[in-house]
Amino acid sequence: MLHAIRILLVLLIAVILAACGATTSTTTISSAPPAAQSGTLTEISVADLKVKLDANESLFLVDVRTPAEFTQDGHVAQSTLIPLDQLTSRLAELPTDTPIYCICRSGNRSTTACNDLRTRGYTAINVSGGMIAWKAAGLPVAMP
Image (tube, rainbow, N blue to C red; front, side, top):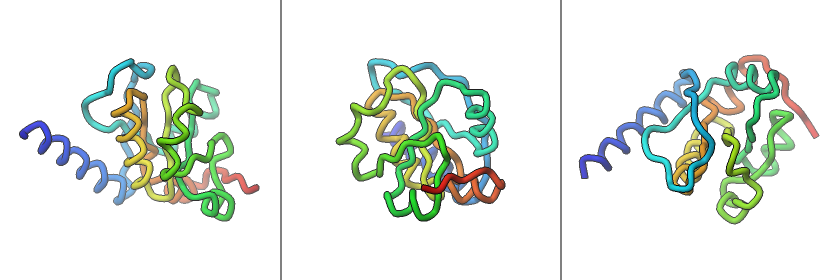
């Protein structure tokens, strides 16, 4: 019971930080283990993600917004659209040996996606602040 309360508190803090646009540094992590991960949600700032993308680091960026948001509002050029409501049915499209970075509009849906993926054994990192933070930082947005 105490463990569950701790997890809820950590998730609450992560949501509050994401909603405030706070950024955290990324943590070095290993590829997806065969068993589910435990511990706190790992987040990365949009600036740190941009550095990784520019350096061609091995990562998989999944955008969990709706197709309409992805096309109408723009997206990170290297992202793959897998809407949150399709994520569990499209797990075969995700790498198991590469960190998965999840992004959405503000960071809420991507937090949900990360938590779901982590329970399934994936290494999942939340992009703090989502596309709102990406655009606010003046980072490039791809349009169809």
